[in-house]
Image (cartoon, rainbow, N blue to C red):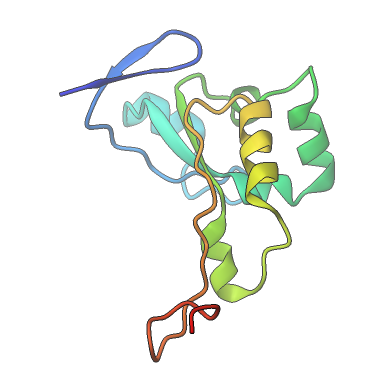
Length: 128
């Protein structure tokens, strides 16, 4: 078993249950997740945060970080949002979403791994 250490120094044993949380569309409140269910970490879609310009600017600024925004001091893992590429083109370079995830104070960040594949051949569109 290994441990994960958050930016604030808290050490959490693995494996961890990490529910996906979206503040604008909460299935359950952050208070319930942390208090009633003892959740010590969440996954947040970094792309959904990034595409909201005012929120993006506020989170990347000096006065707000992702933990303050969520009202949660536990482990915050951000996902690059690459899955959204299945429904259309992402006009966001990998380096930009990685820098954003770092700037907002995520404990663990995910780079974009999107590569659109043809369903019929399973090959990349650029492969010949």
